Image 1 (tube, helix red, strand yellow):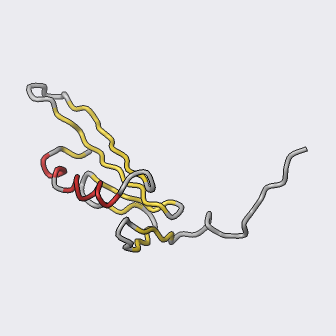
Image 2 (image 1 turned 135 degrees about the horizontal axis):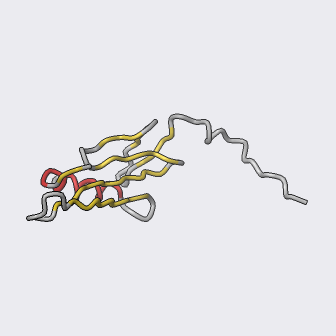
Image 3 (image 1 turned 90 degrees about the vertical axis):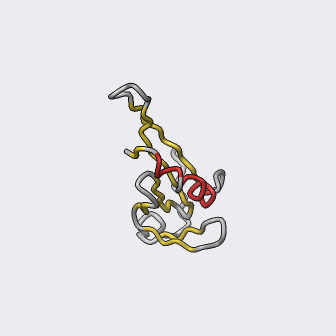
Length: 97
């Protein structure tokens, strides 16, 4: 016999405005994707910020030598605020996808 599903009575699955907080306590209400730079985007999922940086790294001397690079950062294991700050300036010197 299957065990009955357990519900906490919340409507989190249908909630469109999820509240997330960065590491400094700033409240962010995100519905879809928040574009920080051309290369970095963040999303609020289940109350946690998830950011990703997507780049195409070019190898000098190779005309079509691009390699995609994806760098994820997800709370609580990654400090999203530091991730964004550290990579915001570096994004200007690389080709974004």
